[in-house]
Amino acid sequence: MLDSTILPDQIVVRSVEGRADLILRVINYVLPNGKIEKLVTNIFDESFTVDMFGELYELRWGIETCFKTLKSRLQIENFSSAKKLLILQDFYASVFVYNLMMAAIWEAVENAKPKDRKYIYKVNKNVAIGETRDLLIASLATNNSRRRGVLFRCACEVLLANVVFVRFGRCFECKGEA
Image 1 (cartoon, rainbow, N blue to C red):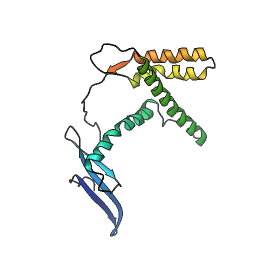
Image 2 (cartoon, one colour):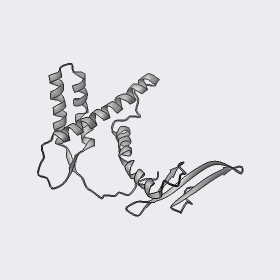
Image 3 (spheres, helix red, strand yellow):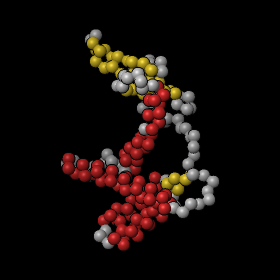
């Protein structure tokens, strides 16, 4: 059904036994590399243009990378129990650790002394999670405020020691079918 959509913006109707049971709007958005990404929505208001959907799609990238980190790095789908309460606890703990990690990254970058570098750098999140997760959790677990500060600053130093330069305009081919 979706593969047959070739216009930049069109409505697709699926019928079962002569009755429309699913109506979708399919946007064929052209990516900067020339590939076409099919965006499917239930927003039929024509004031939302193909370009607007393209901008929204590009803005969503940060959210998608957040979900990827939660799923693959923090293993948000691996639960330590089958009980509902413990599953929720695992879920919220993973989200909390992610937010703590992002706060530490922000803190480390904000407090870093400017360096004369040719490129723009960012913290390598993969290393950040592996190297500082235990430090950040330990900083919250202690009742000693001095120790908490030392552990947090140590985590920030580790973060700043693991930066990578930003490569603008990079595009990668999708390795699998969606």
